[in-house]
Length: 142
Image (cartoon, rainbow, N blue to C red):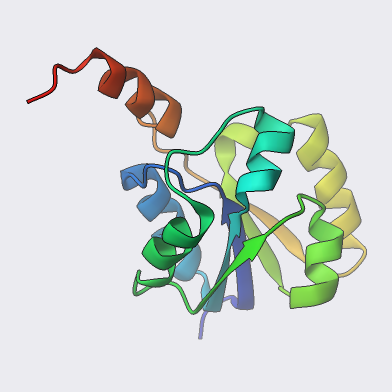
């Protein structure tokens, strides 16, 4: 039996890469049922001031096709308590690069009140969608 019944993770998952896969796979190893939230195009524009390369519907199709994902949905909010009210997860999984940040310390405190844990998973160094965009800009077209 896995430690958690329902787990949740959330991200943009733009230009899907091995770091995204590692996060999802490692989260699934700790829960029976994994829900993955894909940030909507509008949400990404609001909080990152960036335009995604891959549309929300295509990103959702990519994520939901991964065998570790039991349910995938497009989300339009970052508020984890609001998401918990909707999804009732036991644990939320996030990269350990966020550990100690003001936002996640507050999230830990809020989720503790509803008996949900914040689990920090090892961040895959050396790969990010931002880095991939930069590399792609430097490439010569074939």
